[in-house]
Length: 219
Image: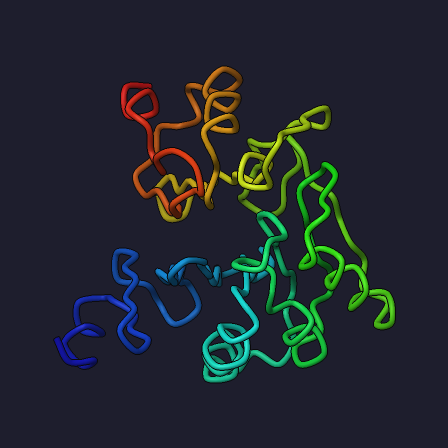
């Protein structure tokens, strides 16, 4: 479909990537991009809820896709930057994006991370005096509530420690799962089985296991 057709149907188009949210208004959109192997989501809602960029992707993604898209939307500075888990696929673009769009704050999941991407992120932020928030179960921002991880979680892989967010937009319940791995999926199901019910699920493929296991579909 050409872009005019997509826009008429309430769809947002960026290159070969596509996202849909029930005919979004100019100030209300959730744009989820399917990057291989990472992902980016732009959340722009009306009112006082902060606009969020969730995972800028790799360095190349941030430089050639995320930043140009945000500039095209008139974004010169980010209200908030959420990193679901700091690996190269999801957070490798932070050192590139931070100097250009200077987020008011950066949110990360609780837990120890040792990846080069995490080290680069931590080194890129202090010079600009940007607060880093560590989110866990029960934290919230605007309509979004953190369902995972818990403060005491210590998983073997970063995928299992990934942030999971849930919120409601115009009557649609949206669940962000990122690349949550098998152990993280199991923990989330045990803690919040009722929270897995959603109209829209945005997620990726973890390094181990399936993105949406059968146990979730039955919850």
